[in-house]
Every structure is written in C-alpha cells, then in structure tokens.
Length: 361
Image (cartoon, rainbow, N blue to C red; front, side):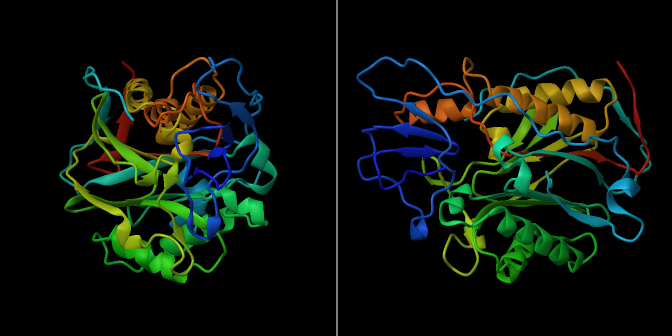
C-alpha cells in the first residue's frame, strides 16, 4: 500500500506504472512496502484509460458454519485469535430494524461473528490478516499484515497473528468490564517479536460504552437502524501509505493510534474489518447489508459472511467505483474498480441481555 522508489506505485496488489504525480515516491521505514506486486495496469495521464488487469474469480473455500460459541471456542477457552489456514458516501437514514432484545436491565453485551477471505493467491499460506473475539471480555480485534515484506521473504501474516494472539492475552489480564484497548495494544506490541508489520484495531465494550483504538487503514463503523453513526478515520502518512506497527521501534508506535469512546445502545451493530473490506465497500453499502440481515434475523457470523462476499465481489469488479478507486482518483491517479486483498469482517450485535431473538420482517 505504498509507493516504491521506482516509477511504479504499489497499491496493495495493483501496480500503477509511470505515475508522474509523486516523483519522490513514498517510502516505508526500511524500504518495506505494503502490498506485493502481483498485477499491473498502466495509468499514464496523457492517455485515456484503456484496459484493466484480470484478477480472476476464485475465492477462499472457507467452511462457513452457523454461529455457535462452543464450536468456535471449545469448552475451556472463552477467547480466540483467528485467521484462515487455507472515503465514504453519505449514509441515508433507513427504517428501523426488527431485531429484538430481551430488555432485562442487564449491562450491554457483544454477540459476535466473523468471516475471513484470504487473497486467492495467498490461500496456501493463510493470507496476512488476523483477528480475535474475546467473548467473556467483550472485545474484538483485527490486524492486517503488510504484504510488501514478501519481497524480502517474510510473511507479515505471522506478525499480525502474533500481535492478535498477544492482544488476547493482554485483554484477559485487564480488569473485568474495564478493558482498555490502548493499553492492550501497547502490551501486545511490546511482546510481538516476529518480523513484519501490521495495522491494528481493537474494540471493547465496557460499562461506559464502546472503547477502541485504531492504527492504520483497518477500522470499524457503528450502524444504528440502517445509518452509520460512527466511522473510524483512516490513518495514512500519504495515499496508500498506512500507519503500521512493527516489532521493536521500526514502525509507528501504538500511541500513534486514534482512541475512541462511543456511546452505544441495544440494537447497534459494530462492523470491524481490514482494508480489504473498507477499500471495496462504502459504509452505506455495509450498512444496507446489516439492515437487511438484521431484518431477516441473521446471526452475526452470517452477516459477516454476506459483507465479506460482497466486498470480494466488488474487489473483482472492474466497472464499479469503490472507496479505493475514489481515494486513488482524489490523489491524482486514474484508477477504477476494486482492489483484491485479504478480507476480514467481524460483526458484533450490541444487546442488553444474553437472550436475543431474531424477528423476520
């Protein structure tokens, strides 16, 4: 996700050649670039845009299963760190959903599910995203390993997975009901030793609301009754040059992340994801999927699957404007369509009780 020292600008898995707008290039520390060079499209401004690269149509053959806490976590562990082995538009207010809650006066809880689709070219290594869900501690997190490390033979997915695994341990050490995501990320980063770098987003539901920290171009939105009421801003040093954590002090530091406290109510839905989601779907598109899923009584894992599938469809669509192409155009590049990448989606329904029901409209 950054420019190299050559004339080519690396945009995730897309290379835009002969771009004259950034003659000095954009560099990562130690000259590591986010995004491997896998396909090219020429974008010479004096000429009309003609042609596009073919990404292919394969997706991860993930084994999707219905949400079941026990099947995901096992009997002895209430947390898991998960990865697969194999510029938003205005949001229109939509009608209220039909998701109902047992109003017992209990404190708010997260009911979460997730979906991960690695880049088709990275299925054998599991891709470079990682995520976790801590059920008892009411916390979730996502991370996106910087793919450019592959140029020097390093799988940054290992760093992302270690970062999320360490985040789970740090979450479990936090005071009950008072998880501090910034402190969690600080501890997790200090313990992560694998080579590579990664973005990170950690979110916790506490008695005082939703607390979160986001560093880089992963992030999250909060949807209420079909409208996006909050979206975390993207952190970039320049176009396609994301903030990133690296073992030691080689990258950005955890205290560079944006910290949020967001009041939430029963019925709100939190959608966290890596840039494979938010580069390919506008927030209103995600909100629409959430609204329809909640109206029809879908559980969060199924909702996450639907969002991820739509993001993969957009990533392979050469004829549709996407958030990534919008950002590229605003930065002066002639680019259109989606961007193929690892896609991680974590969906959390906020409830007031462990008892929830799904009422079809």
